[in-house]
Length: 578
Image (cartoon, rainbow, N blue to C red; front, side, top):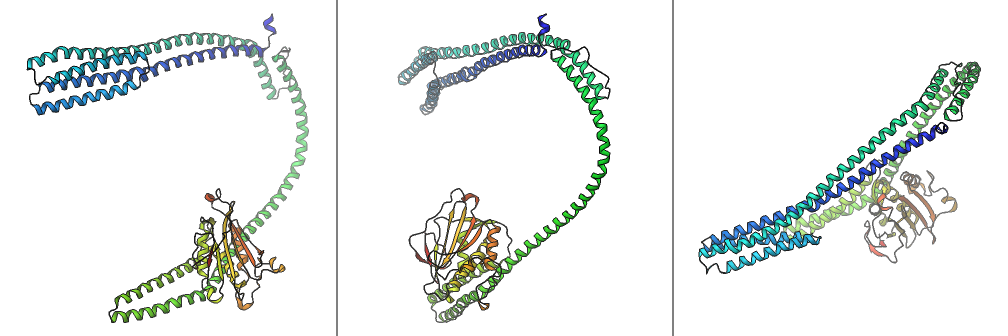
C-alpha cells in the first residue's frame, strides 16, 4: 500500500501543513472581519454620530433663537424688548458659527446639498423675521400674532423639516454602519467556527497517525533506553528494523547498547587508574595551597605598600605646597605692609580733616581706605585658598581663573625680579576636569621658574598661553632665559634635582611633583627649549566632557595690549607688566 511507503516525517509535515493552512485561514478571516468592523465603527463614531450631534445642536440653537424672538415681540417695554432682541441675535450668530464649522468638514456632495437646503430655509425664515421686526411698530397686536403664527411659523417648520431630513440622513448612515459591522462579525464567526471544526477533525486524524505510526514504536524504544540506563545490557529492539525513521532509531539504539558495553569496560580500567592518580593529585594540591597562601600574603603586602606610597605622595604634594607658601610669605607680607602704612596715614589724615570740618576730603580718604582693605582681602583670600588642605578629588576648573590666581600670588616677584608677562588666552573659557588648588600649585611652580630663569636678563619676558586642542587643554609657559643644557633637560623632572644654589631655595621637588599631579589627572607636563631660545613648559590636561566635542586648536593672537597683574582678559593676547 502506497501509504505505508510514506515516511513518518512526510506524514507529519503534511498534517502540520494542513493544520497551519486552516489556522492561517482562520486568522486571515478574523483579520478581514476585524478590518471591516473597525472601518464601520470608525465611520460610525467619526462621521455619523458627530454629525447628528452637531445638527441637533444647531437645531436647538435655532429653536432658542425663535423663542427669544417671539418673547421680544411680546415684551411691551421698548428697553426690555431691545435687550431680548439682542439675546435673539446672539443665538442667531451662534447658529452661523456652528453652521460654518459644520459645513467646513463636509466632503460628500449629498451631505452638502442637504445641509445647504436647511440653511436656505433658515435664511428664508430670518428674512421673514427681519420683515416682521420692520413693521412691528405699525401693526396691531392681532396682526403681529397672525404673522408670527402664520408665515413665520410655517417658515420655521420648513427649517425644522430640512434639519430633521439631514439628521435622518446621518441616522440612516449610522444604522447602515452598525448593521454592516454586525453582519460582518456574524459572517466571520460562522466561517471561523467552520474552519475551527475542520482543524479539530484534522488534529484528531493527526493524533491517530502519531499514535499508530510513531507512538507505539517510540514507546518501545524509550523502554529499551530506560533499561539500558538502569544497567541492563541484555535488552534489544529486534523487530523494529527498517528503512524509515523508526528503523534508523532502532539501529542507533543497538549501536548505543554496544557503546555502553565497551564504555563499562573502559570505565573499570579508568577507575583503577584514577585510584592511583588521586594520591598524586592530593599531594600536588597541598603544594599549590601553600604557594597560593604565600602569594596572597605577598599581594596584600604590595597593596599595603601601594597605599603607603599614595599617602606619602599626597603628603609630599602638601609639603611642597607649604614650601611654596613659605617662599611667597615674605613677598605677600611686603605687599600687605604698603597698604597697611597707607591705611595708617589715611586714617590720621581723615581724623584731622574731620576736626577741621572738611568732610569731602575725609570721605575720599575713607573710600581709598575701603579700596585698600578690599585689595588686602583679595590677596589674603587667594593665599588662604592656595594654602587650604585639599584632596585629589576632581572638579570643574576654569583654567583662566587658575592662571589669574597664580599670577596674583606671584605679583610681589615683580618688585624683586621685574619681568613682562604676556597672556594669550582663548576666546572662550576652557574648563578641565582636575582640582583647582593642585593646578594652581603647578602654575605657581612654572611661573616661579620663569622668574628664576630670567633673573638679571634685561627685557625679561614670559608668555603664558592656553588653548583647547582636540580633547585636551594645552597650556605653555615660555621665557627668554638661557634655556636648558642637554644633560639638564633629561633630568629636569627627577626628584631632588635642582640647578639652584643652596641660597636660592627649593629642594628640587617642584617640577617632579607638578609632573606627578598632571599624571594623576590624566595629563602630562613636558619641558623643551624654545625655538627662539629660553625654556618652554607644556601642561596638557583632559577637557571636561561637555567641551571635548567643540574643542579645536586656537591660533595665537597678532598683538598684545597692557593689562593689570592677576586679571585674565577676554582678548586674544595681553601683557601683564610688573
